[in-house]
Length: 104
Image 1 (cartoon, rainbow, N blue to C red):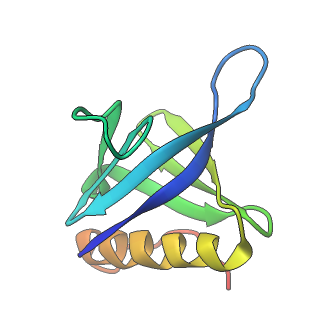
Image 2: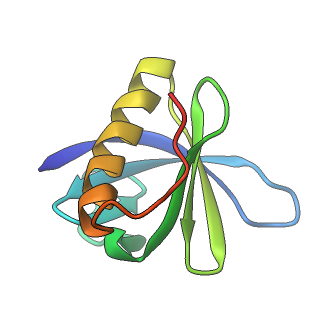
């Protein structure tokens, strides 16, 4: 499965701000970079190591990964739902139906 597009990532600095990043879900790996033309990813996530996926608001969701929680935001509710469903389907497969947070 391959799915890609822009999401905003909440920064982890003292003053949290939203940073627009280009995300790609390819198989069991989720990556992001500044834009689709960049050759290297800024960060890569192995979905087998994700702890939870949780919807937060109408357009945002969280991914628990290691000791960190990444908050991501889409432009629309529909876009956010597509990302959550696509990531969750891989996450669920990787965790072999392990319990996680997801509300519809």
